Length: 201
Image (cartoon, rainbow, N blue to C red; front, side, top):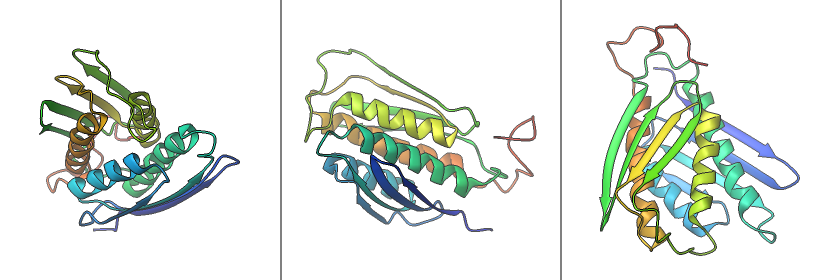
């Protein structure tokens, strides 16, 4: 099988990011975005998805984390899209449920070429407290950027939101890794691209 790897650099006036991805890896990760909580979550994502992932990002963190957080999602999505090529033979769909303490995260993905992100949870209050300058809205922004640039339909639901942001985020990123691993696996029975249209953009 052809190696499904990608190296994506992206430099703007606000950020300088480089992502190296091997979809068929062993879960090794080296992450340095300058945002500690995001680094940890991406390490969990790579470990449980069995992706080899290196990310180095420099951004205007002296202003805030917004641009770096968004652009890491953009480049990570671009890396997966490039590494998957025309998506020939992939399973396309994946889902996983992962618990952590009182939170259960359910993640469903479809690598359809149509980027969409939706998050559903009950109850919406109280919202998690910010952790290390990272907020729940930053999670949503990151995931939307990632899903849009990968061309992935990403639906996430949780039974509730813990007031501890770490406890809320960790099962989400673990489940995302497992679900995306499923979706990117090659199905030996599948001949060609997994779409009746014959193409996934």
